[in-house]
Image 1 (tube, rainbow, N blue to C red):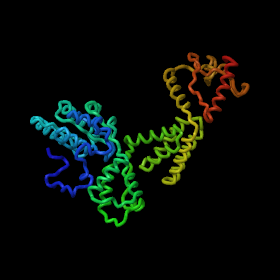
Image 2: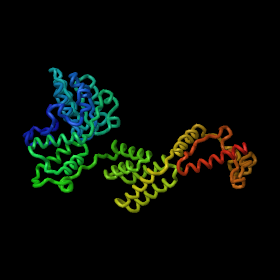
Image 3: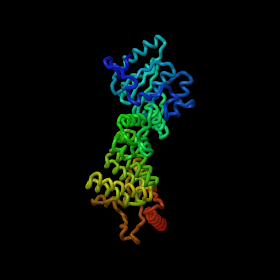
Image 4: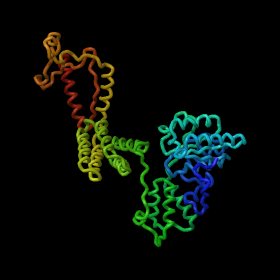
Length: 437
């Protein structure tokens, strides 16, 4: 079957007219950069190639890390026919044609590697359509996705494929790509050392983005090497990869929450900045800070909740960007406050106990008696008004008769909770001294 990306009316570009990233595409697996944990002799791909047999694979990794290239080279390495499709442009009718062509080639002893780019964009029913053809060996499926397969792919499909994780390209891998580009072009990049470093950093692990930026620089007549400021003025900076309803969103909010819990204000500020500069909704971040103040600080510092709610009001009043400073202040307050999850744990255990014992009657002494009949049957009898008791504490029993007293809240010795712990201990001593009411 013809490549679904191609057109019979449009001939391919000559090699020297192709984009730089295409001209530098590796010709063998050993030329792939940054993925040695997969392509090396001890990696999953290296072992498959050595054995001459492929299992179905899902490549999961950021953009520009080599998912398509590795898939094409895998087919070449084991002598399989390479059939690429994209979930963005293809539907069930296209898949039927691919499977029919694969069956025809199989009759002549030629196996097909079906590469599906953006496989997470296929819906559940479309993903199910792969199963019988993967199961009977009509195709070996290699899917590529930037999204977490656990969330985006059917369990049945995942059970038939090995998930391999591609890493974002590190500085050494990007530097190697830059060296190859310079060798191909026959001249060094028109950058000073600091600008070269800035260019590598701007790629954020995306090799394709780096080579596109390099190609732009080579296409411009630059009389003298650029410094970082001139480079920034000339090129557009890369927008951070961040989908507000996908895994990147949840990874960063988790990292922020755990950095706050770990009392690391520097790391917490970093993840807060990552989210806000990538376009996260500030009110979402504020909601998470309020949650943190109640879950992980609680009464160890009651002002944490006040600070977070004040930050929300300040942001509502000022808007962006001025209001973002209030979010930063709340973040720093939470990161540096004493921590306690005692209130959170007390809520979980008390709610569980309430569900288990939800119909028990409170003791008669602490229920109201608004009618004469209720007073006659004992409602409110022997209630002790604590303000009239010595020290403002009666020590009366407040638990249902069928239930022994429970301990849900155990304050820590940190922050304001240390004082609360002293008060509870004092009341417990008085209660024990006075005995049952």
